[in-house]
Length: 625
Image (cartoon, rainbow, N blue to C red; front, side, top):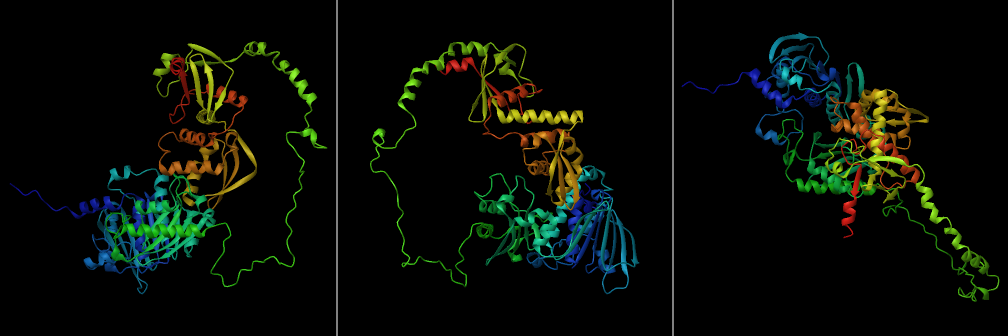
């Protein structure tokens, strides 16, 4: 019997390793940028084409590599940062396992030009599929210049699993932001298809946060600074009013390495308890400086998860630090007991004296004997009272004929289901049939939430908010299908700011937004001008609507591979409709119900929630037995 165990070829082993390290273009960008930071670069340029499918280029002015180092860098487990197993517990650099370049070279065409600062000539290496095709001397700038072309060219299955260019570009921007935020002393630029997206100059942390996230966050940052024995925490958290309904601007860094940690995230939420809504997410940019021996950073292939020696203690320190920062943020004036000067509070002088307030009153006033008080008049004479008592019957003179006059008018007819059909209706099917027509001209509002009206089969309850949502949804769809958007120009256009990532999404969907009547004009640097809005949105917060659409793109609620405009219409209708608790007049209720019954599917909201419920006569009879 022959042996069946054999060693894999290096090319196959590298492709397997690449499956863990290089998942998409953003993964290789992260590895190359971290290597550039470790090389001591002060300027890092990133050039991307076709969202990384065609090209990812990273240029830095770091230390560069010699001819031998440049060749060995593409071997598996080749690194300059680890010498022994003990070094694994004192790591402060980013790339240390030595798998990144070998994995990239296994699934892409790689070209490297590198030169050390004290060398006259550099080295050029061309590798494709882990095979070195060329190595020669070259005249190049000091530092390193990596060109990664045609990612997954030799693994077609992996290339087919890449998402759309807009999705992959958002992942690239996310990884770029994480490295840029962790290193504010380094200048970064990012270009996509010859369009400059980021141009970040070196500066302090607050300047870097403003440059990465956007100008709108500059006034929303609260500093946090705690120096404890076990850990030092510094950075910024957002003001409570800047919290958003979707996650997006939450960053943890441990020794300048980005980290995800749901347990510590709960410490932040606990500090914001009773300050923000339960489903809101505050922004934070927090840096942990901790002894490397107290953490383990080698527990995840992408190194985004870190294990702490005592997570519970870190949780307490973080929670107390954020609470302290939020406590210092207070718009109300407070007394500073540490001030050097004395607080002068003037006291009243005894020589001036003080007079007791004088109160004028009539000691003879008797509320039960008004005639005994001279000059007192109740304003309501006995003569008037007697006349009203005689004429009270005239108020009900036409009461007997009122009902007949009211019901003689021609009412609006609403088609309702029979009892049997109402019980078997399925979601997505109209519940209205032509079997029974009931006249409706009386509406009652219950708890400012439901509209109640009698029908032949019983009582009909309508959720006014969901009804309005359904109406707006079909109105938006009509605008899309007819390509006739009704946009009302704003007399004083509103300026809004978005982060670079959000601005790219807005640019991408601007055509769809215009179909709905949202007219935006890009001014650059994430700034937009709202020039027009549909009439349905004129009483709503336009920025909130746009943020809801952006959050839906980020969370995957809007799937670009499906009907985008229909999904956008549902989101806009859900956020533009009336809130529960609004008082409606009889005319408003009549109009709302009439518009609802003209919808194609009035019985359900766009996401399938019921709009109408009928309490039949049998159930009403049973309640009184």
